[in-house]
Image (cartoon, rainbow, N blue to C red; front, side, top):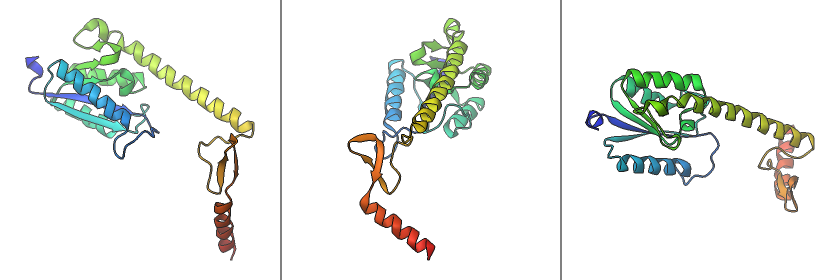
Length: 198
């Protein structure tokens, strides 16, 4: 533990685009990830913690601001350990994750993915990491295909694909798959069109 005492213990959290569960600032999932990582660091007596947080960021892209800063800090010798809740917080491109793991190895940075049981100190767990990354990427692509198919099917059946009704409509209280005209908003819409035509 002494070799890591003077360096930063990086606690990395990421949440994908579209989490609506917020209390003003950070999403509740990020708050929970931070608490989980802090508890792990405390239990293992890891000091000098610093959070790197990408909230509302896709795992498909690696130009995320906190992630980029963390990699820069690794390359500048500031970080000794990187801890994440699991490999999916890192990203969904197994080649990019592999490149980052090589950066960690070159800079003698220990990597821990808690829920995956991966700790670079243990070579046996580290060898399993690429398989987790490949499955994670496959899962993301599979989900994407299923969601697109579901949206197309729903749209083709005449049902709205948006979760919120557009201005001028409200969800039908008797059938959530249909919209009805919002009489109050309809007057505003008519006024907008009238003013536009003048």
